[in-house]
Amino acid sequence: MRIPPRVSVVFFLVCLTSVLIVLRVNGAQWFGGGGPEYYSGNNSEKAEFYWSRLRYTPRVGQGGGYGYGYGYGASWSRDYPKADRQFLMALRRLTRIQARSTEQVVDLDSDEIYDYPWVYAVQVESWSFTDAEAKRLRDYLLKGGFLMVDDFHGTADWQNFMEGMRMVLPNRPIEDLNDNDEIFHVLYDLGERFQVPGEQYVATGRTYEKDGYVPKWRAIRDDKGRVMVAICHNMHLGDAWEWADTAEYPEKFASLAFRVGLNYIMYGMTH
Image 1 (cartoon, rainbow, N blue to C red):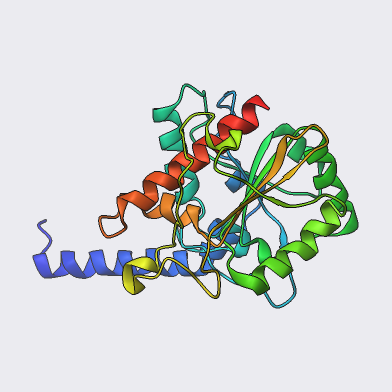
Image 2: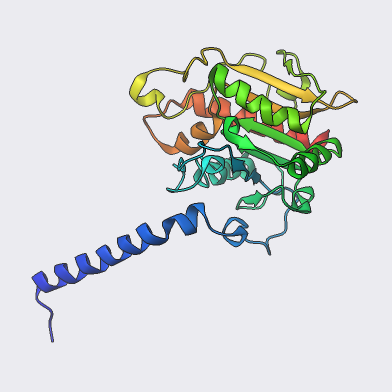
């Protein structure tokens, strides 16, 4: 029996509405509040490099839903997982690093972080740690781990970031990296850099957020001079990775953001 066209359209709309309702109800679980199994990617895929993102507990009153990547999540998941996956596409295309095609989320409430030598964290003005978590991150860094922090802006964000960082590395100085630092030349020569804005640039034309007018490329080193924490303050590299496939977002910002990330990974893998 042939279904009348009008009935077919109604049936399609009913099905679509049902799907949207399910996504609305369960989206936070799938994208923002799900367990490690969602964030683990394909665990059977063997690789020499795993992109890992730090999941932390936000400060009280901060860390609401910011997940622009595919829709939901707390502050740690800003731009997740689209930014991560588009960066991995670039990593696999532009280097010979054998990287897993999907990302990995790591927590500080277990020793799992030691399985991943390179970790990315965002919106770090809102992070918080217990004493045990701070110790585990400190041990991770001093044992050879590498942490890249991104997407926080201005004076207040810096002060909040430092509250957490001082729990982790209370006596380590923070320095401004200079143009000749090795980390800017391990793969691409990035002696001249500029502020990489978030997607808000498309609508506002501003490269800065809050009072973060000047990009700060900073670092914390270990006793041997190795950069173990790379600090990208007053910029949003993750947004540049996420929006790189959007015509409205300028290529020059996305290009620099990818090259910086690739340099940081190459440095972390070789130092």
